[in-house]
Amino acid sequence: MLSIQNLDLPDENTNSSMALNIDPPEITFPAAGGSATVNIINQTESRLGFKVKSTNNEHYRVTPVYGFVNKSDKTELTIMRLQGPPKDDKFVVQWAEVPDEEDDPQAPFKAGAQAGEVILPVKAE
Image 1 (cartoon, one colour):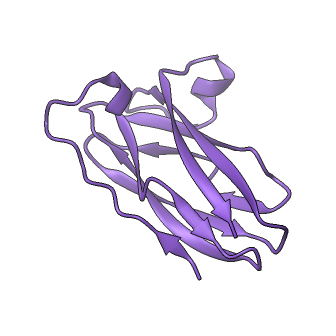
Image 2 (cartoon, rainbow, N blue to C red; image 1 turned 90 degrees about the horizontal axis):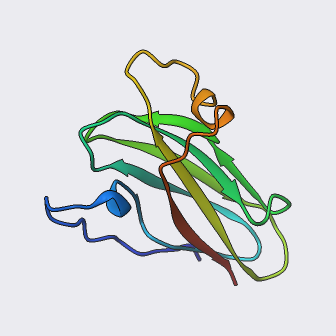
């Protein structure tokens, strides 16, 4: 059974470590596999680009790997867990501020830009 916990959004007084958030903040999948959708939430007044990394590319697939989140908006991330042994893993969502005219979500990361990251713990049991 897939277990998702909800995230309480912070108030308006956010700091740079809270610029990007993930809702729900953690996911539990059955070891037999499953899928879940999470929201990447931009809590700033700037457009952000993101890149998703995983500690277990053998058992997880994520789309999109790169993308944009407009200011004060959110975008969906789909995570699929393939069948495999129970294990604790994580996704790291790196983010960087990008100009409105940027149309390549990989460009800021190829240029070495990264302002911060958010960790999404995932568990298969």
